[in-house]
Length: 121
Image 1 (cartoon, one colour):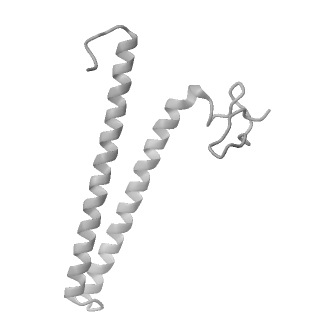
Image 2 (cartoon, rainbow, N blue to C red):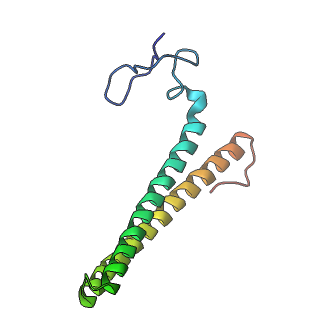
Image 3 (cartoon, rainbow, N blue to C red):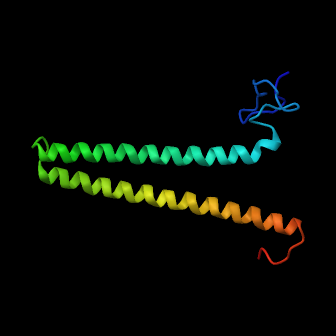
């Protein structure tokens, strides 16, 4: 049996249903696991971008040391890398803040459902 979910493209999901009438990706009981996997995936992409920048920086360092790139040009390139690294750091902090806000919101909702009025605004 095919998954009963409708995709963002407005078409029926093509995967087989494994949990009731939904595939794993669309089953409501898997929502939390999907979020956690998504967070890990986002972090992995950021790490990949950072690794790429570090590789490029090492290449420029070697090129300057071995005389293939002039020092002045190397210095300007490093200014660009510093700007890029600052942007990556800001992006990381924004994502981290968003994740913390989401977790706090979930905790507040959980406490409200239990009738505990000490949480929330």
